[in-house]
Length: 397
Image (spheres, rainbow, N blue to C red):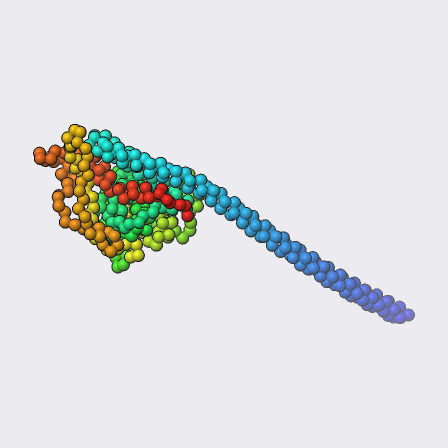
């Protein structure tokens, strides 16, 4: 009896255990189904959310692009309008400088033997600097340079550039040259050399020399400018070469509160007219060596008149005697219209002869500063011609 009861108890327990296992299995399967369904729903929700995020990102990128385009267009409009205002102002200043040059020419013709000549030349020098700055701003804003129809000696072009900087006495042109720049290259090369000379004078001591030489390298004619200032760092050289390459048009907003127009203007001129400028070299004094490299398309080997000398010789005339124009001997012309070099008939005074007097032909004594200014005056005859040509029939491009 006890055994039968025990067997029934064990059977009941086994049945309950089997029932529990079956129930747990069914429950587990149901939970698995629910879990898989939940995971599918979560994955579906994640996919939908991902698509929404991608759509939102796409709209954001599109909005940012549209915003950047609007900002860029607004900046370009502001840049163009600012350049237009500056170009008009610069042209007005150039016009005033040309008028002042004409007035100073007349005063020098009338009072050439008067002591006030020195002051007039100093005024002309200041006027030439103002005209150069205005011309550089005009070029940076898209304005044209002065138009020329005749070639010019590369020596005279450099002398013209020398006369457009403040400390022009420090510039020493070490040699002459029988190279003539073609008409289209005269104005851009003159402005380029003037900016490089001004840069050399600005970043060196007031008594430091600035040497200019001419070198022919293969088919290129090079104008080499050596200063005795502080050499540039590698970063400064790289930044300078980027500006001088002209590949990226300079923006007025990027010139700073104290804008430096020199290198951006040079870069534009070099790119427009096909010459190169390099400032990565070291000068003989340990400063910067700037090289203007002119390809053979911009110059020619033609005979040119000898350069004007430094000291004007003023001969006194009797009171009441009218000025008589001096007879000019005719000279031959080359195939390109340049005058041929003729034989010098009378010696031309040099700087060292400034204090000498000739009893047979009395002259006014010339002070050293006046001699230097007179040299500057003769060296800038070419620059005055450019100023005049800039306002005779020139039109904005």
